[in-house]
Image 1 (cartoon, rainbow, N blue to C red):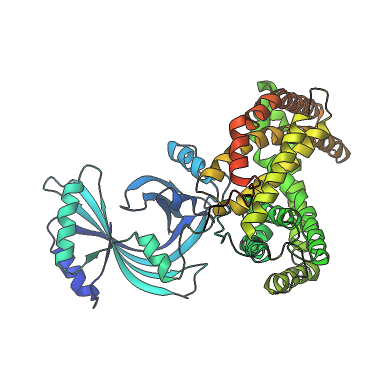
Image 2: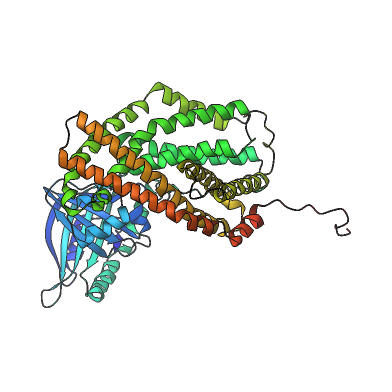
Length: 524
């Protein structure tokens, strides 16, 4: 639990008062650096926790605490370079729990503290420690904050498990001598002093639209939200902090292309075509790096597909992928620093702010009417394409269905706020199951082909040996088997998606409304 100090903080007087609290003893004074850590998308915060790295000399101590009561969920002490990812920590139950929350995301400092600490122990009558008390003088900076530096005193009281009652007595005594219990979590409160609200970033679309708004205005709001997501992830993409920055950047690019293509007739044709081409280019330049990120993220899964005796033989493939990813990342970072890219951003920003985006037939149509029309038409198309697929259909037919499914999903995500809460979300969940199957079918095919291509590249560079290429051949075979399994599962997935209940719900939400005849109107 955290406390704030008296208004007129006098260190000598406070030390004197603390030393008079029964059982409280000063153990040591020490300087240290503290970093409050979380991922860019606040995964620890959203899991009701936070992590502090305390650096004193060569020692790095990681404390994982609960957000509301600061209770210790786990700690790790290291005497080496600071870990960046969950997999960098030593294998332990804490590391496994962290890995489930952080996944592929890097821990980044959200607050940096230079601290002068007084450390006290609370001892009972048997000289057993019941709590630790830290009185810290902090100089705080926030990497993403508006303010420069904040100076403050903070006091933490951390009970030993099982001695919470004794710690409560100390807490009451602290309040008697002028310390106040913080009403809000320390991390949340301190970040807000820098103008930062934790937990706000999300790559998920949550755009509130007015159903009667003109379609051009509503579509512009969607595009501005996606552009903001691109900009938020640009620096992390260039620096290659973790693979999710590029992932979220590319998703925003794909959604933008889909909005420009699928929300039809809201902007002038020339402008629409221009930005479709520009964002297609962004998709092209970011694709190779993302593909290699995916191979590296899935590498341990690839290893697990092989017989035990071949798993170690993939190390040369991993080395090759790391080198290739680094080269592609360097090219990408260079491209995102060019005048061409910066001009694209400036011109697109101006386009979004310009009220005149060209004459268009649907520009002034109420957005809900246009949204329903486009979703219903795309739903009908996916049903038609899916029903036409048989066991003899070529793979290209499934790939086209996958693309149509993605268009439908993006449209539903763009406009879900226009419909009753939860209704669209449930339909998206059913669509996702079909998309997962179609995505697996596509991914297995591409990955099997890529493994074969990597094998040829590695041989040209004299990387690997006969065992390596044997292992890669076995891996490619397993990937092809995975594709075949996805193909066999397709019919069941599509039948589940194309159920009478789903069709009825799509029709109810998005289908054309029957116009009342003059005779059917009620008298006024």
